[in-house]
Length: 299
Image (cartoon, rainbow, N blue to C red):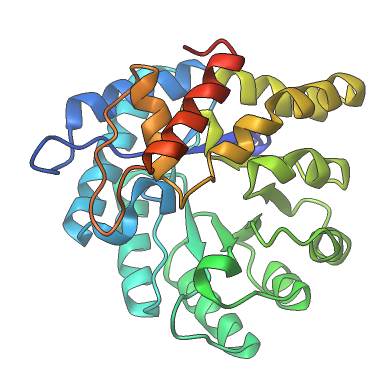
């Protein structure tokens, strides 16, 4: 089995545990990485959910080193994905090169935020990163955060132009766009959901998995969900989609990762500490999160 095949279920966009002084809690992070791997999920370090935008490059390096080291110790040879995107191509290259040298198996590169590059500029951006590293690259499209969508034709151009651009995390919420990407890219191009609630729909169209927020707290359940779809048992998967629907929604009742970190604290997984400008959910939303967790017997 190719190591890329490990991406065809669940990659957890891991939350980052902090001490009271908001430094990374290495012991808790290692424990959390083990929790994910033991439940069938591949670890993604320093994605949006990991609060990457509030961490320095040195802290990114630290988190990548911890994840790679803990993954090697697991004996399960997981695929370690590192979030190394930036709105600066130079910074994205630097972070990606560090991740490759540190032993990560691939990198997740978000569409550059704030700069709003046009489509031909995006081709140049991703091509420059692909030329600077040799390990696999997953494009990350999340226009709600970046204010720039990467078009299906651009994705197809990159997929055909660069051998190490192997997939996309699609969080546009646009099923028409997802359909076009699947139609226009090679058969072995990996299309992953970037929204838990859209995973069923994306996989029904031919996607192969999810980069998940919900799997931070229910990794075994999300792994079962995607495995069921990859096995073609759509009746069971539909039942699971309906069962998990309220959880998927409530974890985005406020901006991610506030809700999932609060849920993790309720479940005894890790504390809810966040770095500003992120803060824990409002009290009324905390109540809604708790109610959903109780309904699913997670508390």
